[in-house]
Every structure is written in structure tokens, then in C-alpha cells.
Length: 114
Length: 391
Image 1 (cartoon, rainbow over the protein chains, first blue to last red):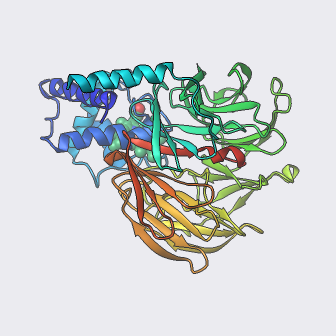
Image 2 (cartoon, protein in one colour; image 1 turned 135 degrees about the horizontal axis):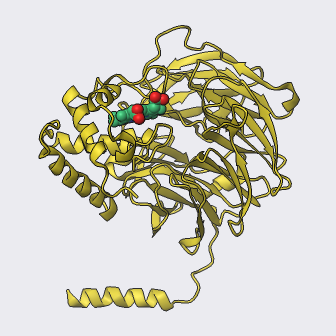
């Protein structure tokens, strides 16, 4: 991997560390699962929401767009999708804790986001 | 060690003061998008190698490319609205503008003079001078009596200096006559179906097909008879079966049209549909390994290569059209994103994002010919696209 991709990963991992220490948030999953989830967020969620989460076919998932929204409800959107829209359910691939952890991460924001 | 460093810097210095690079053609050149780093790797298919890297193209997490009519310049459409004109011979950026907040792709006019970019935000199409990238016209994708703007998808060039594209939220297809690119004329086709997600034009430039996400079916516009309007084809191809969730939208550009057959995706099903292009009726459906993203005709038209959405994206299948059978299942790497054939079909280049590789196969024997290290590769675009309608 080249610098930018590494920087992105590093920044995310740094963000994870702060999320993990932020009290009532979902616990950070152990490695290597954690890296897999970050990769999934950037790449597979990114194919609709943009790799920088600024939106694509799906809406932006930036801190500003998620602020004040109920984390439980948002993580249920990840798990069950939004029927009638292109947002698919990810329950076959994610535990409820992992989905919740993804929301915590998104609310913190992608430090590198341009 | 010191000697080596010295030698390397001397070689660099030499390269810098060297006279013009030797003359060469552009017909065997191409580029690979590096999804995560905002750079592209330039490739040549004669020696099957990478010859340069160009940085500074912005957010390429979704990107597509068209070529100038002489194959020298690549126009790269980035996710962040960046439009970059790349000199393939000098391996550097010739011009670049950031023309929107969020874009999905673009097209080049038949005469090569106009670049059209399709944008999500703000929803619409913008036209640019292919030479200078100076703006020529803005076509906002307004619907709902002008109150809302739709995301534009599936843009293609059409004969007669026209562009055709679809409006996701509006369910419309627009045909734009850009003969006078500062004053484009728009013909709207409304109510073509729910949520067109992408489109393609057949290689002869006659038919535009939009895939629908919001219902089972596709929308067809015959550009020989635009006055006849848009009609629905393959209606209810799901036959009421439960649709599976879609983890990645199929990309229709470049979907196989070979002989009398067109191959089209059944969204939400592990199937491709074979359609008779003479009357656009279904002739067969072929069960495949997962949800198809691309289905690319091998030059010659006998075989079609298909890749798949998450979580089946480590696989490529090869369909033999006459027998309608799958003749090969390949595993080129993790997260296969794209496949591109050399124009005469002696090689197929396949990107595997999560393995950071681009592999070159012999399409007949499936032998691996070369493997290149490329950081998070996604789209592969060869300059031969310059000579094809709809690419």
C-alpha cells in the first residue's frame, strides 16, 4: 500500500482508539477484524457513500450529517437496510456491536476527509 | 550503497535532460485507476507493463475515463467533481478543473470536441471544451416542476453530437443535442421507470438502455426513432421472485452486445439475461456465481466475462454464448473490480482491489501472462476506447 492509503488507515485507526475510549460507545472489535471493518467501510460502503463518506448514490455519512441522530436507529439501518431504497442489509456480515461501532466511527468523522 | 544512490540520481538527472522521448503510437496504452491514492498508473499492453504514475487527480474512489479521438489524452472523471485531462505520452496532467461537488462519469462527443460530465451534486450535466476544459454549458437535471435536481447516471455519447443520460430520482431519460455546445437542446423522456441507476448505448450507437433499480425491467430508447419514445423491455424479469439485496450496483457501460445478443443484468438476482437485440425479448437467462457488476464481451463476441458484487467479488466467470454454459470460473484475487480486453482480444486485464494487483490473462488458455503491483486498482481503461461509441 502506498502512503495515502496507509495514511487513511492510520487516521482511521487513530480515530478508533479515541472512539474506544469514549465511554458508552460500542467497544472496538479486536484485530484483525477491526481492520477488515475499516476496509469494508471505506471500500464496500464507499462504493455507494463515497470513500470519503461525502456521498454518492447513498447520502453523505459525515459527522455533520449524522450529528444528533440516534445511533441505535442508524445502526439498525446498517443491519437491516432501508427497504425500497438501494441501502442493503448488512446483517449477514456484521454483528449488532460491529454496526454500532461503525456508526460511532462515522460520527467521529474520517480525519483525512477532504 | 552510496554508489547505487549516486547512480540512481545520475540516471534521474540524465532522464531529465534527455531530448524528447522516442516517437511512439498510443494504440497500446492505457491506465489503471488507483482508488485510494488519487493517482493513475499508465500501462502499455505490448510489453504488459506499467510505464508511469501520475498523481494529483483528487478523489478517485469512483472514476471513469474517456479518450480523445487520437488516443493521446485521457479524460478522467473523479468522484469529487474533478475532470482531469491527462497526456498519455508525456505522462502528466495537461489540464484539470473541479467542476462539481460529486460526479459519477462522463462522455466525449462523436467529433471529440466536447466533454460531458454527469454530476450527482449539483445534479446535472456540464459540457466542456475538450481542448482547454473551458466550460461551455450547464444542464441542470431539474424535475418536479423545477423544484428538485436529480442525480445523473448512465451518460453516453450518441451519433450526431448527442449525449444521452438518465435521472435517478426523476425516472427520466434526457437526449441532448450538443451540435451547438453552448446552446444544447434537451429532449426529455418522462416516466421511463423507477430509479434508473445506469445506462449503456449499443456499439452501433442506435439503442440506449437504462437499467432500473426501482422495478424489474429496463428502459429502451431507439435513437433512430426518438419520436417513438422510451419503451419498457424485460418487464418483470424477476417473475415475482424475492429480490436479493444489492451490495453494488451493476455498471452497464461496456455490457456485452455481441451479434444479435445483448447481455443484461437482472438486478437483485444471480443471473444474466440474454436478449435478442432485434426485438429486445429475452431468449435465455444464465445462472451465475453472484450478482453481476460487469459483463464484458471478449472481442469476437463468443464469450462474455462477468464479475460480481460483494461478497462474491473474488470470482470471474466466463460464459460461452452459443452453448450458454459457463466455461471457466477464475479467482484473480480479492475484490475484482474491473476487466478490460485489448481491442483484438489477445489479453484481458483484471484488477483485484484488495490484493493490490492487476493480472493479465490469455483469454483463450486462461494462462496468467503478467501480474502488476498497483495500489487499490479499480477501473482499467485502454486507449482503444477512443474509437468506440459509448466508451
